[in-house]
Image 1 (spheres, one colour):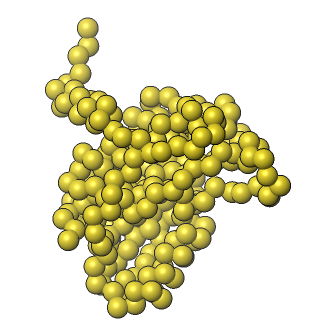
Image 2: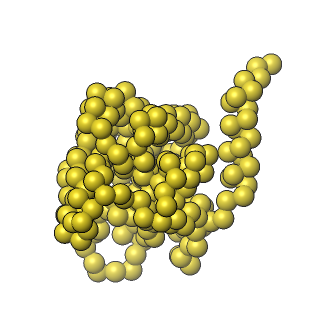
Image 3: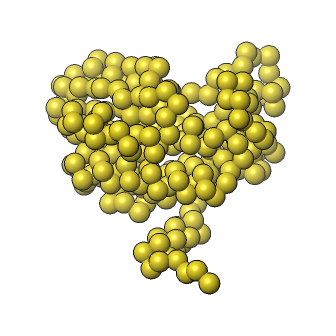
Length: 241
């Protein structure tokens, strides 16, 4: 009989305890959401940015397309110019958490960021129903990314994936239904919150409400592409006043 190493067993027991104690986000009355159990995002604890911060925006193609990252930079430049925050984006199309972990020293840390955001999980969920190996890989690599940032005195805003509104035609290996994929993404979001709670501090940057796929809505509106703005972000790092 194979037993878990003591270190892995203690981590498993901690995660199990956290999962049992988690309150859930309120859900809409639509029966579509019956299968979803998103953990409640932690409350904001205070201002995260400091004067002169060098912000690294890290993620996959959602980041590389320079949409939400540009909004972040524009907002910081125009609304809090006194902070003099500089922004760099390090998105890489098709990337998963293991990919960024492998390149973060050469591509990101060498530029000495003081605070970083991550947005992974979309490619990590492999566009298929949830499997434990998917969650375990995402958990291990995301936690390692956070630890690498913290070891370099970088505050971390850990972002979870958003949702999908259709089966992507460009992913030939995609399987399951839209609900299967969103349940998978919801699991990765919950794992992200657990990771943050195991670290020094936890504080969300923002959280968004989910909506059922457009096909389930009684509306004449045009289809809406899920936005990174619906991502839940969680801060992990040194004490923030």
